[in-house]
Image (cartoon, rainbow, N blue to C red; front, side, top):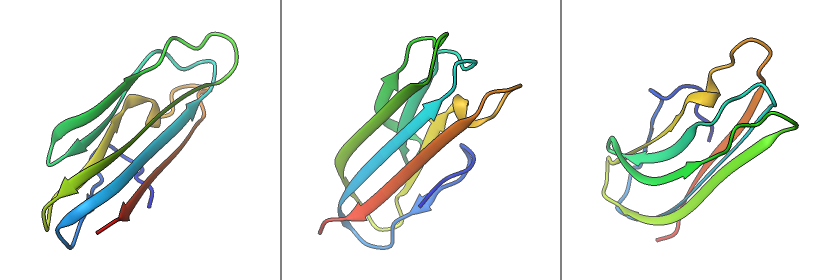
Length: 98
């Protein structure tokens, strides 16, 4: 599924190992930002991009992570908020592995 805002959550309904994958692409007007995957409000993965002054830049992170029932996943990435002419594309995928 996709998340539109940093306050959005995906809550898991069963205990087990999950594959969490996050990707974002931002245009040349975007500045350097952290892209974090959070579980229950705590960062489990953090990636950092460089300033993008020419062309597009990309950040992504993937992790297999053990979650308990009713744990929730969020993404903290300021580039999700469009500013001026900035355009952002993003995906967040969560898959139950068992």
